[in-house]
Length: 302
Image (cartoon, rainbow, N blue to C red; front, side, top):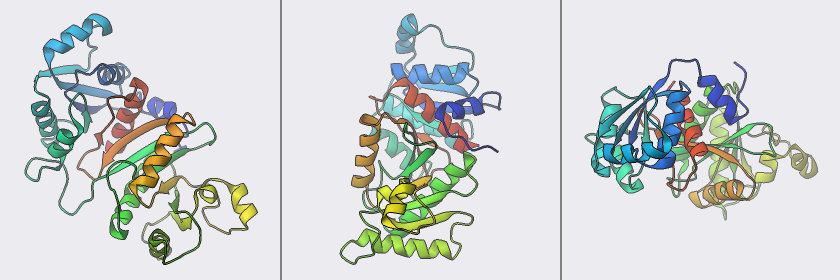
């Protein structure tokens, strides 16, 4: 399998394959609806909109009728719509969950509910973001930029596993993982560097199978072979990281917002660790980002 290097190629790779089943919670949001309609029209997903049918009918005046491959379950209440969409996934009637016009806190509560949710016991809920950046010839998989404030070593091990699964599903046979910190030096004054060194040693003992994991690494040497040469750093990642694992949510979120707002990065993202991928996008995200995130969810569900 040739590695996917563009998000458009992600979409192309799903067309013609058996479509996954997408359940959208409160799908009466214009950008979410447009993305879901495009996914259905492109044969990427069979879509169930758990949504306010009256509002969908009003939106159809501007967006046009729903394409084949889209069905509607009428549920005007956003919280109940989220519960019903989660139930579709839990019951095996959908492969991917997506957030529409429902509060993130309510969406996450439904996913995390111990009796009716989607998180198995002992699993960590995390978030994988895939970035297409103009300055790089490859996609970047980054975590965690949205959910876990201060992951410990055990949590980072699961985050790495999630990122490796995503990268391998994109055809990257031997992913390169950079454990990002502010420096390459291990220092007790910077706990993230100590944790990165511990994880590096576990990786060297075969913890992650056929993957290259190194850290602590500053961002420049994680992404630039030239920076490695100038610093005379002999890292197996060699400035060619496919995966960036951040020490905490502050570092990850600042990086994410910098590259999307200042560097023109295109984005796909999903909540992982659950029994099925869960698309979690902001109401401010555009249709393209939501479509790419649907495609990521379908890829991970495969």
